[in-house]
Image 1 (cartoon, rainbow, N blue to C red):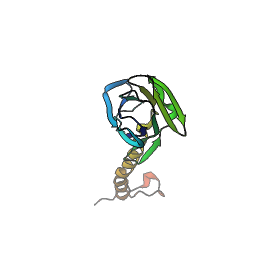
Image 2: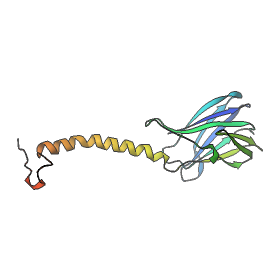
Image 3: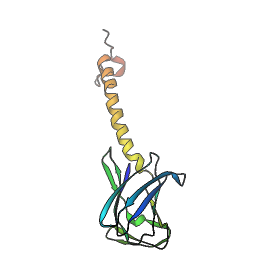
Length: 169
C-alpha cells in the first residue's frame, strides 16, 4: 500500500510522513522525501507499513508557507484500487497558521519551524483488498477438492446423499 501526494511549493523543503499504526507516531515508521522549489506539481509516493495505518502525520522540514497539496490517494498496487483522500480531513498539529481548502486542494501556511499536519485514514482501508484476494485464492484452491469429491463419490444433486455410491478402482 502507498500514499500518493501531489504537492506544489516555491521553496525547497523536505517532507516526512509518520504513520500511526495504533501505537502512536514513532520514528519506527517514517518516510522522508525532498521537494524542490518548483511551481509545477511534484508527485510523491510513500509506502505504508504492513500494519493497519490509522493516521498520517506530515512534517515539513522548513517553515513552509505556500505549500499546496493538490491531491492525495491511497493506492493498492496488487488490487489496482485507488481511493482519493479527502483533504478537508487535514488537521493542524503544530505551527500551522492556516489551512485553506479550495477546489479539492489544501493551501498550507506555516507559523513557525517544524510545521505538522495530521491526516486521519479510514481504519479498514488496509484490510479490504486483502479479503478479496483471500476469497479468490480459496476458491481456486478448493476447485480440485470439489472435483475430486464429485468424481469419486459420483455426487449428483438429483439423488439424496445416502444413496450415493463410491467408485472403487
